[in-house]
Length: 389
Length: 201
Image (cartoon, rainbow over all chains, first blue to last red; front, side, top):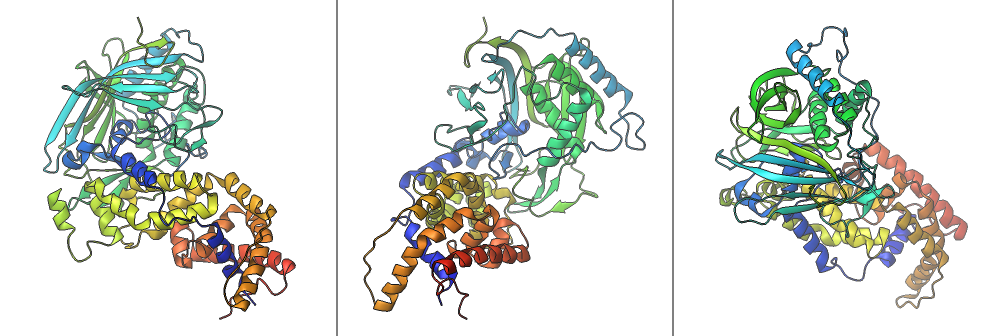
């Protein structure tokens, strides 16, 4: 009697390709994809991440070694959010968890008031939110020397309703052509899996992320808080705990959900400028345990402001505000002490979901700039690439 | 980077784990992983989703592997199960296409002339005729069961490697495989009672 497996193998053999190797252009695609920015469908995801992730495998990386955010290989859009699990003590009177110092909470409440008083611009679904900003980012070479580049003028066009193709352009510095990154819109529930080759990559399921319309991001502070915690739980992030003599990671530490939620809010503040969303985001941030106040923080445009910060795993996330009007100015990531005492270090993060950040060289010294992004203006325009008058 | 290259030039310099390690600091090294496994991944993807789509699936699987290489478990010298796991997720995005491929195969009839010893020809003709019902059975399997069955039958992975690739316990591999094989055998025995037996060991 013949085995079902051997019959199945024969069927497999009859379905096999005539050639052993895939077509040459597949190799070319892979090699090109390794050298060129490859991002995830979620525009500007991972804040510091996005921008750094775009630069993965860029020609300079091999020589200069930047802090590369390596996005795990899970295709598809954001997983269905898990039930919200905000950290204990995020609501008033919830008990022993660290309470927000009045200063930070007050600044966030004032920022929420400023957002509430900001008029909503009129925007049609097929228009674009134009975001004019500057970015500063650091590269660290294998000897630990940090080079800060920028401020680089960055212009972003995001689809008002999330279904149209957007664009990011960034000045590349002396004599170099600006980089242009196409952002595939979520059309009919599908979008290109990678942002660099929308024509040739398979489409994956997606949910539109409107940049200036009510959508998946709640405009209620409680709901928004639950939302960012659900994202934190669904998309964990690891940071390399250090590098050995061979400059390979010695282990990874998972960021707390509180830290992920805080950085998710920073990302949201860039991607969604609906005043109601911004107001809810500031109120939600005020309920995340462990936020602190910092005076005299400088944004990427050189403006001095007051910052609400949260520090963990060698990085201080800062939301910077105008110290008199409490208008939101931008987001900084500053290197901090990395205290591994009591941290759970794993050899490899769990692949399949989330992302891991890895420093090929020594970690930057506390106080060094890792990344800064400052908002200069926003406007509504008709086309991606069009500048407001 | 030269220092990294030298550091990796030790005795285990050419294991997959060593290459992936080196590729963290020197991304171009990852090309070697492609060259080692592209043929095997391509064959498997082509079998499951057919021409055209196979190109996309293989390219995306390698790029996903490249982006996720920091989380590769460096204790595993052989990257094949890891790559097949990523490939399986890419294939999953084309499930409808795959099912349509099997169904089309089930509908088509084949007249093939075979050379070789008479008993082998007879067996091949019988197996050829069984392709239709077999393809139909594959199309009807639960995706999780089909993944396990085809990683074993077409991907040539061991049970442990399948467990590794799909990140499931070996016991789950065994139960999914058994369930899939029961369905396949049922279809085969309905078609020809001499077919679809157990492995003769």
